[in-house]
Image 1 (spheres, chains in turn blue, purple):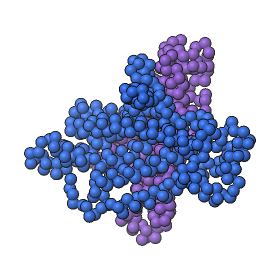
Image 2 (spheres, one colour):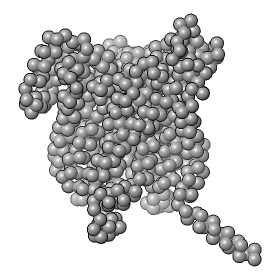
Image 3 (cartoon, one colour):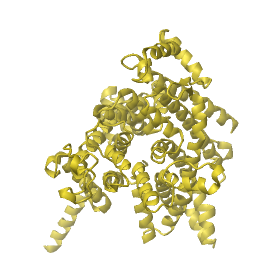
Amino acid sequence: MKGFLYKRILQLIPTLLIVAIIVFFITRMLPGDPAAVMLGPQASAEDIAAYSEKLGLNEPLHKQFFDYLINLATFDFGNSLTYNRPIMDLIIERFPNTIILAVSALLLAVMIGVPAGIIAARKQNTIIDYSVTTLSLIGVSMPIFWLGVMLVLYFSVNLGWFPATGMGSLEEGFGSFIRHLILPSVALATIPTAEFARIIRSSMLETISQDYIKTARSKGLKEFKVINKHAFKNALTPLLTVIGLQFSGLLGGAVLTETIFSWPGMGLLIVDAIEKRDFVVVQSTVIFIAVIYVVINLIVDILYKVVNPKVNLDSNSGGGK
Amino acid sequence: MNNVQGIEEARDIQYRKSKKEQSFIRKLLRNRFAALGLFVILLLTATAIFAPYFATHDPYEMDVTKTLLGPGEDGHILGTDSYGRDTFSRIVFGARISLLVGVAAVLFGAVLGSLLGLISGYFGGRTDAIIMRIIDGMMAFPFILLAIVLMTVLGQGLVNVIIAIGISNIPGFARVVRGQVLTVKESEFIEVTRSLGAKHGRILFKHVVPNSVAPLIVYATMSVAGAIISEASLSFLGLGVQPPTASWGSMLQEGKNFLVLSPELATFSGLVILITVLGINLFGDGLRDALDPKMKL
């Protein structure tokens, strides 16, 4: 396990390096003065000159790249001109809000999607199965920004149940916090919920037809136990992979969801920065999200191994469950 | 006599059944969901091509005296937007943008991504390692974020939207094709071809590519749905095609600002996105099941 951990962590380095190179080249290969483009149209000539100097654009390319890497490695993203603050401060302020939204959406998706998938598989070819399948097909096709707007229209504007925008602070009470959280979480959770239901359903169907499930049944185990102890555990591995994949979708989807609900997270920061043409903030935030995404994938990989030790580890094989 | 005819008929049926393409199309169309999906796709294509005939008004004609009309008012089937433009006609013309971006961006990503995947999978070794590390790096960006970053540097515009979404599609195609190539490469007939002295190019394009096509088609179909959503997302964020071009995403963004006065604008522009994407996904699912039910995509 230790060796595996080291190996996976070492593998992060080239990936992160590539991320850095991609962003570096996107910004440097631009036609025109990169400082002018990154600062946007409203920047003055002095700003551009100062920024060129700060970026070291007058230096040779390899030195520029080296300095850029050092800045990234020390989390020094520089200052935002439009926000007039260090970009890292902005990220530290916004990032927890995105995590709150993403995690609550993920929990919601697991709580609804997984049981829905299990029930659909248990009641295959019944009306329940068809409903779950149809709803999950609609779910994966959902443009979540539209769903968000529709949720605001029906539950905020028409019914007045939930606030349309913003994030409740915990000082205003837990109730307000939750009320603000519900609509954006539902919007963001839609696609993962549908994905989980689909994955769990098909992998449960596959597992239920296996011999050891038949054995478990024939030896008189209660149906609940068969499903819970045997079938579900084996259907869990594909779910974990999908959770990892969905998290990237959540981070991306958060950009749209946060815009609709004015949720003060990373997504709203990016969109605000785009509107202000503050590309330095856009690029730094995107690099940050890419790093987080890579780290989350690493955690999923490790979990994957914990749940299913047979993967790659020969010494632990034999545990059939 | 009758008996012989019967046997012959049976043999005939058997023969026809063995014809792969026929059974494929039959399988596909027997799937009611796939047929429904195909219908949506055909309807969308027809709407895009014959937009001027379907549209009841000029989608760009403004009329300040008729802003934000409700459905059915003054001959506007779905009402008008804040500039007094006919919503229905704009949705009809928006199909052009969605379809064009969806297909062109996926083609862009498919060609470049497949090429990378082919080279990577076929040659293996260091080439594979380098290409796959680049692909990993690209995949470290959530799809829509990569498109957003590219749009911020490329600037608004239809061609740039296609390029940005196209580039974001490269890693997926590269991975799918590489996986296929690795499987096909190991098969015996490739070994035989190679020992007969065939060159790399011939092996790749005459043998490896045709055997990798099925999953590629399924993946491409699903990707068109994703590209359409991405275009709408970018336009919704104000990063997509330039106004006043009718795009479903930008219409939805406008509708969001007039949610209380005119909820129809947001409702219908988003509903067509959902129906389109759902149709393509239904068709893609059917396609996968008909081609190879065991395919993991």
